[in-house]
Image (cartoon, rainbow, N blue to C red):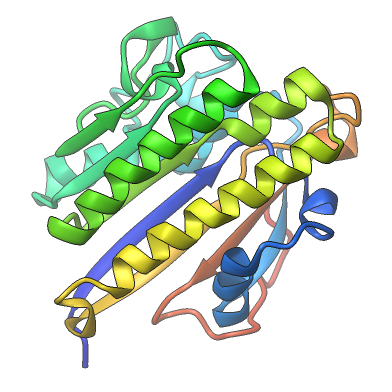
Length: 252
């Protein structure tokens, strides 16, 4: 029986659940088919913005505790309620890893970083605020993450992909948005391949979570209370997850 437990969380920003249903995502489907994919409703108290939503996802506490109320994290309480990579590294001595292009997640920009002290960190900021620049940044993020996951031994990792969200902001939730989601799925596939080709994979028990933070309006944009903005989702597979299982109650 594999005894070395490992966790990979892949955060894909701003992917609408209804759009996801019509875009070919074979790698996400692999995760869902081995476990589940379930809708998540952003709580009414939480602004449908990346800062508050990701803070809740990675700390496990609501916005009233972590105090990240917008994409400016100033005034946060992340020192009291740290992200899971920092908590595991600091309290349990675990090897943790974060890869992300969005600067407030991993730098002091806008009151960051959200990820305070992972053991290992790689970061490539986009060269410009354009959809293509974000695709390039995500590509660099995944290239680094594949190398770390293949050749090093992080016990808990978080990899962030931001291009779908930025594409929706610039171009709306049309064809370009769908293409960006498909590209994110391809990058997810490369991360999963990196896990499976590890020389120690047979002795490891991997739990994989893929999650988005919020949705988008049709024209692109979020921050409001519409169903399209408040509907997120979570996919998960691992040794403790029964294939086809669903949460017993709605996830908020």
